[in-house]
Length: 154
Image 1 (cartoon, rainbow, N blue to C red):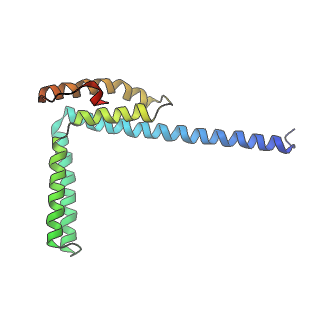
Image 2 (cartoon, rainbow, N blue to C red):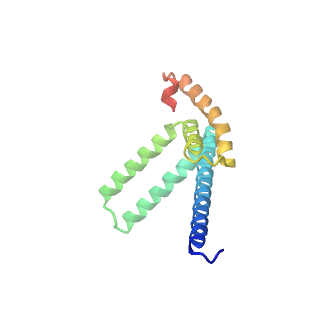
Image 3 (tube, helix red, strand yellow):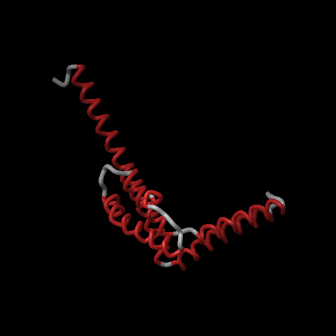
């Protein structure tokens, strides 16, 4: 039976579809995991603002050191150095002001909405934390006196 040409083609097509399905499944699984872990990073920043500040300061200092190195090697001019330094200072200050719980919610939402099905472990965990993060974000907005409607947070 396997000697017939149409049977071989049929089996090859089934095998190819199976392999593609597995590749898509594992791709979505890993993407959901990455999105969940990003959500966890921002959640930890929400719970521990000092951790957020420390990580952002480290990033700022690394970028500043890289700029100083480029300046010392004369790869950039002093004017370019000042411009780029101002930009990374601005980005640092903006990142400090951003809501960590908002970003946690967005990353959990990304895991749930973009990377399911399959309903992997990471999607289930993100779905649980997503509603909690959204409520914390609403609470934060109310404390800051920022008016909002629920549809604005989607």
